[in-house]
Length: 111
Image (cartoon, rainbow, N blue to C red; front, side, top):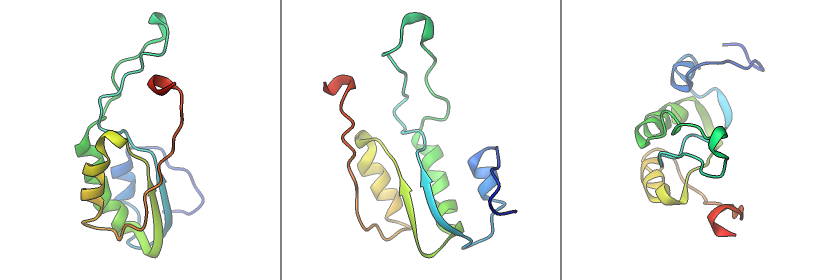
């Protein structure tokens, strides 16, 4: 694959084309596995539950992320605090977890 090019496609299909240990950093915000549907929009603007918003999708991608990352590189993976323990347990099977950052966004139910 060419470097410095954006590829559009299913992340798992695209990652399978990437060479082992060829990526310096992964920053990803995958679906959180919470069957998310916004209730903040007006009735006419509401949308269906996000597709692929399940744990299986994220957990399948973690080994591929590990495979493509160079040694001593970094992965930043956003997750829901509701599922943090599940993500942590899956990620620690592959990665040496150094830290967890909690981003307090405010708003929503927490106002």
